[in-house]
Amino acid sequence: MRSELGCCHFALPEDDKAFEYFTHALRVSREAGALASVHIDLANMGCMHLRRSEFAAAISPFQEALQIARKFGDELSVSKWLQNLALAYSQMGNPALSACFQKQAEEAAKSVEVERARAAT
Amino acid sequence: MCAQTQGEQEECWRLRILLSKCICAQGDFAKSVTLLETAPIGEDVSIEIRARVLNQRGFGLSRSGNLVGAKEALDAARSLETAAGSPAFVAEIEINRSTLFFYLAKHDEVETCARTALVIGEKQKLPMVEASACAGMGKSHMYRERQADAIPWFERALAL
Image 1 (cartoon, one colour):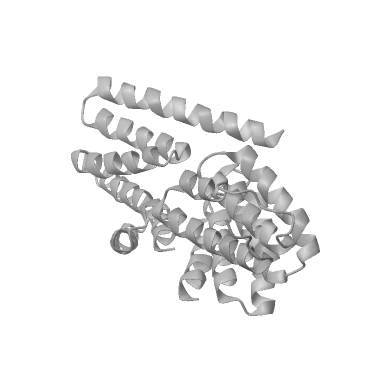
Image 2: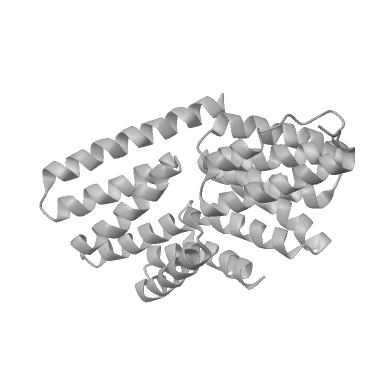
């Protein structure tokens, strides 16, 4: 719930409150060993770094989040974290790596869309 | 091998569901589903237990990206539940359906399911159900870009 509250404050944007919720959420998730939440909390921290233009600092949380989401086959999250990595590398002046992540993100998003379409029929 | 009584079989299934929920919390949704497929559910197992297994399976499938399988499992759980007839369990299914609709990006349906569960949670005084339903309500707002509307729902869920 803290993670979602953080996301709402992040969007408003009320960054101090968002950061407080994200930090708390990540600590609680890690302590509980709740990897299902950990990767989302890590990605939220990554987004906070992107917002603050701390692009290099955003890489590590997104990579860890990506690793967890891939391990558990969460393609929707995989596509989002890849897209954020693409953005971070783009901002860091590495268009080749950015394009590579962007391509992977699009492939993951496509597989999610295919599954959604199958479920809708 | 000793034949299990119906009560023993049902206890096993309850424990499998519980273990499946724990594995979900760890993030391994595919494994949480596999666990529920290790043994066939016999006809002599009660309708309620069969519906509970399907409900948990539906949740694991939603979270592991098998949205077609999740829809089938939750629809089946819903139809069996009609025979089982427990309002608290109806709410649990609705909460899992709201998760499925979230992954299907159908946020109006997320709200409908969450609201159904919320009414039951409030009426039956089930704080866990109420909290999950509030979280569902919050998500339905959040993903429709209504963050300010979502915050009170998440705060209420956190306080429960």
